[in-house]
Every structure is written in structure tokens, then in C-alpha cells.
Length: 246
Image (cartoon, rainbow, N blue to C red; front, side):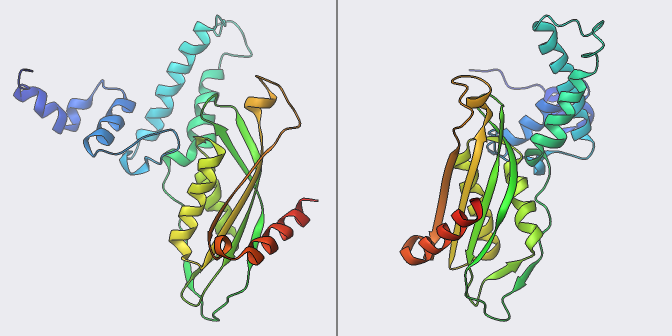
């Protein structure tokens, strides 16, 4: 059996002052584990990051990225082109391309469907940028969103579709899961009769490496509610999206 922890050890876990010298990533990870929360690449962990820790996390990532460059045998001390690369890459990951992991969901005001709108609405194309969680290569594409509201649905502002989609996409992930997460989020916000999402994207893990096929794209969709049950509605949505593509 493991020996019980000493009183000082227990106090260090409970006392923030005992965290001095512990990497911020370890502190955040331990909070997640203590709550039994998942922290996969495409999960949002903003609730477990305390004020000031995101800046400290950026510093930690920059230091470890410097180690990666050193291991790649790049002379960052004397190469003027790479002297600040580690910090630039850290800022890119934490503040931009993986931002959706570390910041809270953008505020969204929901409005009642006063006029009882029940006609098809389509938003798009929304340009999206993400990263493949297998190689951390860019995924760049477009998303179309179809909504069939009912009298009890909430409505959101047009720009909020783009903000919520960007928040989900700014994480390392695979396209199939990303589209499902966008659908889940919009469904919870609006509760429409039907929801449809189509995403078309270029994957640099295919274009930049591997098979290096520049022409292949991935297209996938999620259909919920009336879009799944009504083939005519589904055809109408897909026809309008295809018309916008051409």
C-alpha cells in the first residue's frame, strides 16, 4: 500500500502558495483530474484556468518549444530568423489556432421567435480555420449552417453563428467531430425543429505531407431533426449550398 501523504504535502495541494515552482500546465491538469474532467485536444478547459495563468502557460510553452528547436539542431542563439520563433509559435498556439481550448464561450444573446418564423434559414459560407490533431497541420475550409426554427426556438444574431463556429474550430481536432460539436452547440442554444451543417475543407496533413495531394477536399455533414426526417427539406438545403459553392 502507498504510504499516506504527510500534512505538509496535503497543505501544499490545498494552499496556492505551495504551487510555487510547479509548472502551470501541471496545476491546470491536476484541477481537471480532481474534477474528473476530460482534457482531450478538442475540449475547452477555460473553467479550470485561473486569472494570469494563460500568460504563464504561454511562457511555459515557449520554453518547451525552444527545446523542440534545439532538438531539431537549429541554432536559435545565432540564427537571426529563429531567435524568437519559440515564443511566436507559443503565442500562435495559445492565443490563436488553439484559442478555443483556453477561452470561455463567446457571449451570445438569444431572442424569442416572436414572429414565429418557420422557414429555412441558411448562414454561410463561414470561413473556418482549425488544426488536425494528428499532425497539427492546418485545416482551412467553409461551413454552411441551415436552421429550421419553430415558434419556441431561440434566434441568435447573424455574427454569432461565425463566432460560435470559430470558437469550436480553434482547437486541434478531426473534421468529423468538429462539425458535430458545432451542431451540438447550436442545437443547445436555439432548439430548432431542424439543424443542418455542411463543411468543406482542405487538409494540409494531406497537401503538405504524406500523399501531397493538392486537389482532395473533405466534405461532411450533420443533419438533425426535420433535416434528417424530411428528404425534401434536406434536398432544398443541399441544393442551395451547392449553388453557393459554384
